[in-house]
Image (cartoon, rainbow over all chains, first blue to last red; front, top):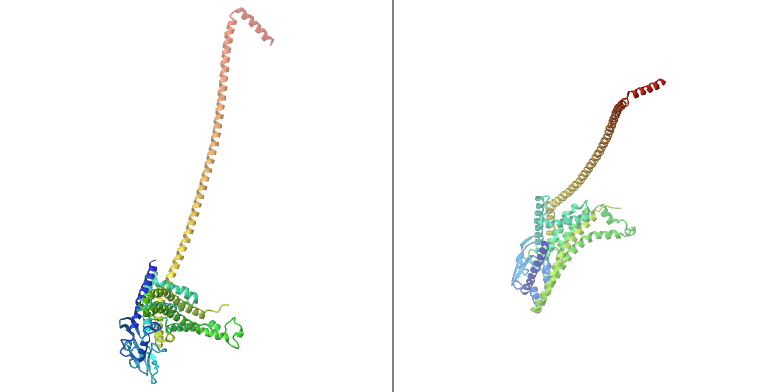
Length: 374
Length: 164
C-alpha cells in the first residue's frame, strides 16, 4: 500500500514541477534576444518574425546543448555553463560555454549555429563564409554531463547495494537493496535466462543489467523537466547508437558456428534462394545490421516522440496565449491535463523501452550463442 | 535535422563512460550481487530441502511409533488372552478336582452310613432277640407254673425229639 501511494506522490510532484516549467518558455520568448550584446542580422530577422516559435522551442528542449538551462527569470537566464573542448586547426580550445552568452556571442571565431544542419552546434566561418564544424568537438555538453551523472548515480547505487549484499549475507534485502533486487532478479530470470539459456547467461548479465538501468534512469530523468533531469539522453540518437553498437559488437563476437551458418547458409531454405544469387545470405547479413539499427531508432524515437508531444501541448498554451491572455489560460487547463496524462504514459514507456532494449539485446545474444538443434 | 545527426563528442564520451561503468559495475557491483543472490538462493533451497527431509524423518518416526504402539497393543491383547485362558484352565481344573473330592467324600459318607446302618440293624436284631428270649422266658414261666402241665409238655417234647 505504502509504496503505491509513494508512486502516486511522485507522479503528483512530477506533474506539479511540470507546471512550473510552463512558465519558463514564456519568459524565454519575451526577452529571447534582448540581453545579448552582439546581435547578428539573423537574430534580428528572427525577432521580427514571431515572438513564439513552437518548433524552435521544442527542438531547443530535445536537442543537446552547450549549457544546462535551469530557469529564466525576467531577463536573466540561469544556466550551468559547461566546458567546451574543441580541436581545430591543430590546436586545442578549452573554454566555458558562458563565453557565448547563451548563444548570442562569438568567441575565438566560434559561435553557436542557427542553421538547419548544424543548428545548436558550435561552428566557425571558413574563408568562403560558410559555417563549418570544428575538426573535433568533444565538449562536455548537457547530455554528456547527464550521462556522467547517471553513470555516477548507478555506480553509487549499485556499489552500495553490492556492499549491502556482502555485509548482510543471507539476510532478507533491506532499503535500496529490496527496491533493486526484484528488478535484478527479473532481468536475470526473465530476460537473461529465458533468452540466452541457463548455461551462458552469466557472461552477458552485467551488460544487460547495466544498459537496463542506464536506459531506465535516463528515461525517468528525461521526464523530469529541470536539473538534474531534463536532458534528453535516451532520446539522443548518438547515445542509443552507442548502446546499440555495444549490443552489435557483443552479438558479433559471441556468434558461434551455428549462428554464422544460419547467416551464410541457412538450413531448411531452398538452394535456389542461395545460389546462384545469394538472396538469403544477403537478407540475413542485412538482418545482422538492421537489428542494432532498429534498437537504436526504437529507443530514440519513443523517447523523443514522448517529449515532443508534451512540449507540443505546452506550446499550445503560449500559441493561444499570444492571441489573448484569457485564451491561453483556458487552453492551459486542457494542455496541463494532457501533459500529465502524457507524463504517465512516458513513465510507462520509460520502463517498457528499457525492458524492450534489454530483452532484444538478450535475444540477439541468445541467437548468437544458440547451439544447433535437430 | 540535428535530431538524427549524432554529436561526435557525445558518442565519444558515451562510449568511454559506458566502458568504464561496465567495468566498474561488473567488477564491484554485479559480481558480488549475483554471487550473494546465488548464495542466498542456494541456502534457501538447502534449508527447504533440509526441512523436507526432517518432515520425512518425522513422518517415518511417527510411523515407527504407531507401529510400536500397535505391536505393544497386540502384545498386551495376546497376554490378556493367554491370561484368560490360563484362568479358565485353572478354574476348570479346580472344579474337576473339587468334583472328584466331593465324590470321594460322598462315597465315604455313604459307606459310613451303610456301616452305621448295618451296626444299627445288628443291634436291633440283638435287642429283639434278647427281648424275645425275655418274653419267651416270662411266657414259659407263666405256662409252667403248674407242675402237671410241665410234665405233660416235657413228655410231648421228648416224644417228638425221639421221633427225630
